[in-house]
Length: 341
Length: 240
Image (cartoon, rainbow over all chains, first blue to last red; front, side, top):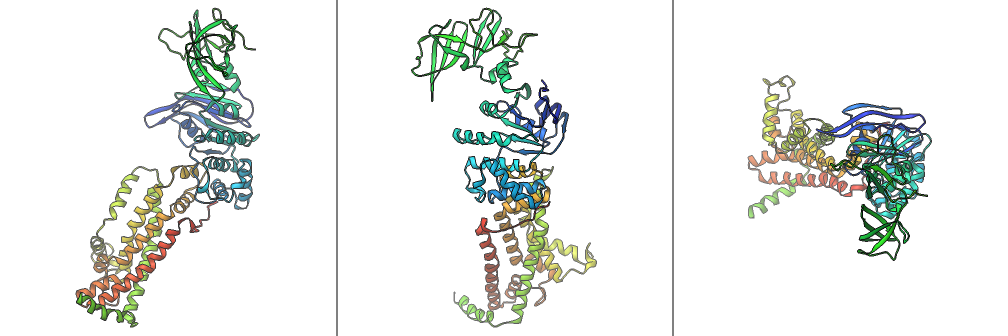
């Protein structure tokens, strides 16, 4: 799959790039473009080859095949937020020195970047005394301070607790957006991608399997593999069609057209995640408290979802949608399913 | 113990007598130790950093060789230099044999493995993410090396301390290449050997006490710097 959906000046273009780590081909035939002003998230499960692709796009690794054009300087913020044993401000100034920024400009630019990341109050603190979240902020500030044409961040929110990550994400959303730069962020959490990105690249097993705006991919996943990765965990089958659903598509409704049996109930903060067994498949939903218990029979309504032709008998789920048809969140013949409002 | 006591009673006054011979070998020892350590550091630090930080084929072999060279017997190094410096040797034309220069060269050669091997080990212990990040943000080799030395300063200072200790204490090589000529190219350590061989035990003990004092002063000073660790202000001008 290739990506060619956005508009604007192209700062990075790669065509049919494959990357090897030793004898293993980790990234296969990827073609993408990054344009000025856009913020793109590279999303994929662990081991998909995201960091390897990032290294290749950033020039750290040479591709085994294909071409990469870069128009401007690339800065990469690696996954490990290791800082030098000196103050926070000195760390950011050090990065500016590496980048080649004149000495006279470093302090001002370093403070500006720290302010953008909500870390100005840490300026004089020794790096060794920072918490995990603070280290991440300084690490991001270091990459922002150099003002690259193309900024690449490798899992900038990894290893943080939920609250710290949410706070950092909130600050990063505005700090990472720039009208003069293209930014590529590697994430493996979908929530981070939704919060940050104008466009998503989805990499699974080294292949770019989807590219496009997050909402569009969520509404029209191009394949069952992408749909599964995007959280379409429920499925209903009938008459050669398969409907994949996310929990949000499934609601408990006493007047619903489908009957289901609750097979599992997992308590969540704000309700219960239910596994529902139906005659023609299995669905998942999140129900408010008080929720039905395992063994109960409930009525269910499905609103939305993505429809695909039923996979071949060999059970391969990564088949593309029917030829000539885009997966639709509409009622399929034979499936008791309703158009989402 | 009686022998010890008798010799000590003679030795201690010798130290405070202002003996010109003793003063001359103290001065020469300090010169040799400092020059050998500084030259070994100037040569060995870049080599150690290259071995520790480099990503080239054969790096591991060099690391093994550097570590193995820590076990190099000083007399063997001395023999090697002797065969280089003798008039029939490859460097015979430089008149180095039985000279002070030969002593400086021998002690530098013996201090070098400590700097190379211990510096390489020290920088290899740094968080890999920091150096990789420096590379990713465009740091040149000089900036990378400066960062590594600063971050691994405790380990690098340990290398310098070990090199200085070697330069102060080793005798095997300098006796072979310098000849251990009385009052000319003797260090405190080689002078002890000289006096002990001549059965002048009181003088040997006196020199030994001075040597231990010198070791305590020089190594102690570096040790204090090392213990201060993060407090040391090693500043490197970044290459811009």
